[in-house]
Length: 198
Image 1: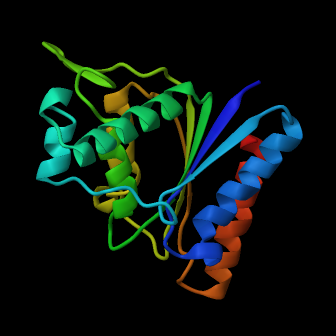
Image 2 (image 1 turned 30 degrees about the horizontal axis):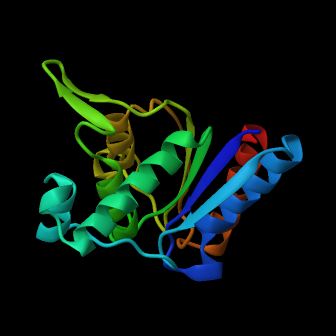
C-alpha cells in the first residue's frame, strides 16, 4: 500500500482554490490507485509553533538540556520528519500570500530541516538525507508573476532540495482574481493537467 501525504496550507478555508485543486487531484489518484492511504496535515487548523530562540535550541541542544516544552517541540519535529519520509507521494497546496508562501508552511519546513537528521553539511554543500519521492506543488495566484518575481515555487523547491527531494512537479493556476474569464480559463487548464498527472 502506498501512502500519500497531503499538506494543506490555505487560510481561506473551504473557499481555498489551492485546496480544491489538491483534493480534486487526490480524488483522481484514488480512482486510479484505490489502495493508496491518504494522510492529511492541515497546517492552519492544527498550526505548528513558529521558530524562535526556544525552538531553535530545542532542535540543536542535547535533550538533557531542554525544558519539557522544548522536548515536545523536538518530538513534534521527529514525528513530522518520519511522516514526510515515510510517504511515497507528497501533495502541497501552495497559495501565494503577499508575494510569498504561507507562514504556516515555513514553520513546517523549519521543523523538517534539521542538520544531521534530514540533511547534512558536506564540503560540496548541503546533502539531503530523506527518501526522494514524487512531490506535487499545486500553486495558486490571484495575479501573474514574472519569473524574477516568483518567491513561491523556487523558494519551496530550494527547501525541498535541502532535504533531498528532487522529483518535484509544479502546477500553477494564476490570474485567478484578474477577471472571471481569466479565472475560468486558468482553473479549466489546471483541472485538465491534474487529471493527466493523476
